[in-house]
Amino acid sequence: MAPRRRAFAPRISRRGGRLLLAAPFALIAAVTVVDVLSPPEVHIGPFLIAAPALTASFAGPRMTAFVGAVAVLAQAVVAVARTSLTDLNHTYQIIALVLISVIVTFFAALRERDEARVTRLRSIAHAAQSVVLRPLPHRAGPLHIASVYLAAEEEAQMGGDLYAAARTASGTRLLIGDARGKGLDAISEASLVLGAFRVTAHREQELPELVGHLEEGVGSAEEAEGPAAPGSDAGETADETDEAFVTALVLDIPDHEPVVRLVNCGHPPPLLLRQGRVIPLDTTDASPPLGLSDILSPDVTVETFPFGVGDVLLLYTDGVVEARDHARAFYPLTERLTAWAGDDPPTLLDHLRADLQAYAGGHLGDDAALVAVERLAPGPPG
Image (cartoon, rainbow, N blue to C red; front, side, top):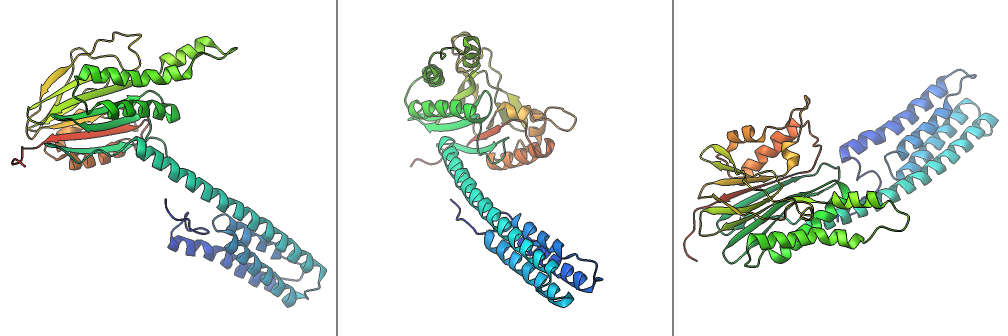
């Protein structure tokens, strides 16, 4: 957790803070000089109230109180220069300035306390999200792996998209998925699938059995909700339950066999980059998304594709291909990839992330996850 900084430090840089602080002091000096030089019937001293009020918008209570004190002192100087401190008009102006300074200092203290609370909550949320969505290893056997997560919501590190990797005795298993919806509900679905994958993926079992465990993970959330409460809309509850699903792609990449085995559960097909070409690995019989086995056919089909040394496999979620430009055109992922087909996974994802964000104008409409996997030449024994 980042240490708590005082006053305006969390909001602005040091140079920006100096420039902002110069504004209320410049205002005090200008009002003082103009008021002293103005005709007797003109009084602009009340404008000094703006100095502490402005300071309270970006600084802490101490700096706000200090600026208020300087403004009160300036008002006293104006009173002495024009008439006297006991002049009724200036006395009321000084009293009003003191009261306003106390009030804005109090609200500056409240704002600083609320900002500290929000910072703590944000740090806790980021820590929780980093536990749910753990970073992928850079190396897993003969594989070189890189990943990128682009959250659509501000201040979020993850949403409904997910990815994970696990080692087995004979290879590496990968998971990438997308939980329907956004916000906490989507994160909850994603965490259940990730938890089920981490518990079972390292075991020596076939992919259909692994997909069955992931299906149970999504189903456990629906069972935990229980029956509809008395007086609630049962039809609405049933619709919400039916809508909970996760599209997923589960892969098994053996260490000593140049292939990749995968099960596609309603997810966008991966792309294979080989010798400057981009090849979609379309499955002939995709399985239903996780959570919909009771509605659709529960058959799980494992398909095998060549994946040799030097090949790069790109996994992605629909937030990538559904990103739109200013003309509302979808992002042409396959076409853009040809320019970076020879790059290694980290470089490829760096180019792809920058191009995707520029294409979407810096804001994605949905979360986007990218995983690039390259098979390296086998190293020497040991």
